[in-house]
Image (cartoon, rainbow, N blue to C red):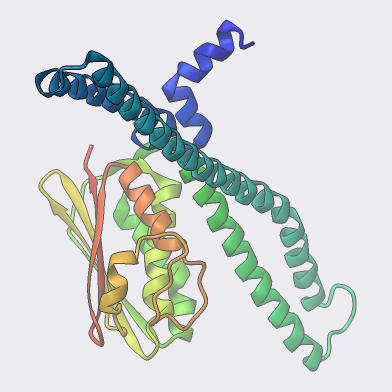
Length: 313
């Protein structure tokens, strides 16, 4: 038999929802409760209708019991299905988190070893060998990027993404990141232009998370250009918020793909280069967690513009 604590836990909807890492309105227990209310209402409605059209009270009772039983079985089956889906989602998120943590150290050690070998710390490296080491280094960097994105995604899903707000200059952060991406942009034949309002006020936001957002948008704009092109970034003050705008003149996003662009692991058919399919999901989640909004406009063959706003506080 269950003790009082176990009974309380089973009846505690927020605790049950936390267990599955889902919001209250998606919780299987809430669904079962709603279905229970529907069953009661349906039974009462059936009884009230029955007494007006059926004279035999036993027949009325039988109809009400039969209807209630059918609805209960239906509700129970739905609830069990939703519980299995929620549990599968929880296990998947937990698996991703554990695997990502376990892979961090080996990949870091591998990167360190490759850098040491390429630097000649353990002896002279021939030209042919250096090419293979370069391939290893590029692939280890891709693995590190994937692990980082998976860890951020698992924290977003678990609601444990750390947010530490402070006063920052979005202008200075953007300048710094443009400087960091300059070698990548130059190698990709992409020119980056930056225009911003003078005396743009500081905003209260999380420095590390907003860096992740701008890095993802800037990386996508350069990576998927596919040709010599231009990326233009604009920062503007708009009433009580700051508007960030990044435009590229690349191939654009296919119209049929646009409604999926912020979903996890989605990669557009027009994307031929590598990527985790998590960047825009992470970007949208962070912006919304910081109290902002994000959207985009895109035309095939003409380019894409991503926008996000953050409140000035």
